[in-house]
Length: 164
Image (tube, rainbow, N blue to C red; front, top):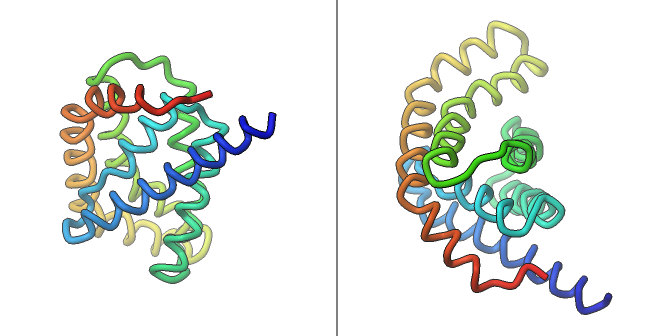
């Protein structure tokens, strides 16, 4: 039992480190990221019970790294929401996962606008969402392309990491 918990904590730490690394590695390219795909792959391989804590730790580290703001609250909800979608949707293969990743990127700004709506009102939320549409388009297209080409190789690589 103790060994199983240690293995689980190790996988959570590994996932958190990978999320931070892939986020940092592509910081120079606005809205081109590997976090979404990584979370999808981790959820498929290790399940929600280990991926959600990794997402929450990732969000905490991001807050300490970049500071706290309205986006901070979004991270604590949107990444576990992606885990939920990945868990509940019966997807098989690269294309369906690429579509999930792409639509998630497209909807990211709209989801953020919901938090702006709650904090600053309707006009601010609409302004937030409209000004972010070009970034959401890049986010969605980049997520789709990255997932289309990297989903299968990453899932194959995950086979080398025990999930028990």
